[in-house]
Image 1 (cartoon, rainbow, N blue to C red):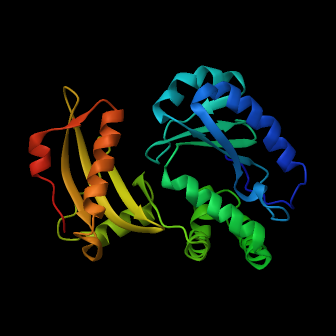
Image 2: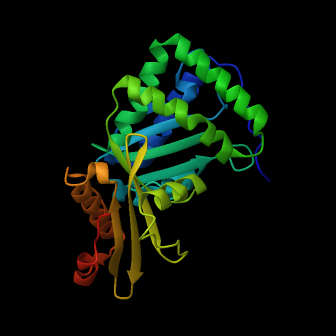
Length: 270
């Protein structure tokens, strides 16, 4: 059963709810946890929000988080793995009625800076916070049962705040949405390899813009072939293609895979 999307007035108890939960999470993650932050709309005083507390723990080693799944389950969380975003660990609490989302990142990940800059900007710019509240209320009314459309509707606004608050980073995300696939087709129309359910497709974001795409095939004996790596022509030979490849290799290493020599030879830029 899908949850109905409901945006409610700011609850002054949300910070206390974060603090009490953060103690439990930090204990479950152990010494690997460096710091823990309240993020998302419930972290901004006065901002209307879905009544779900978003929490961002920062850890020394993201792979070590997998060893704490049992401890996180003990305090009520369901482990979701990366849940589409490379190098993240995602947990949810409350199956019938979600109460908390946990987004765990390794220190140095650009997504940490993105979340905190957005939060801090909204805390200090009331007009933008009011506009965001108004937008979310309208989206919740228009898409009460469609969380994807609700999130898509916020993308342009979030991107505009990213531009204002000075965020400059990147992230690698599995291509899952129709919007991402449409962007991929536009990025490399002559060489596009259609989606395969048994392959891995990543899009590479610079700030809020997709500038790259990769198509990976996982092979026997923990080998992987890189069938395509495409970078927007505006960003070629500026280091973004090499960074994208480096992230792909790191992700595969985390999965105990390696790119074979043939796959490297098949790497392309369009």
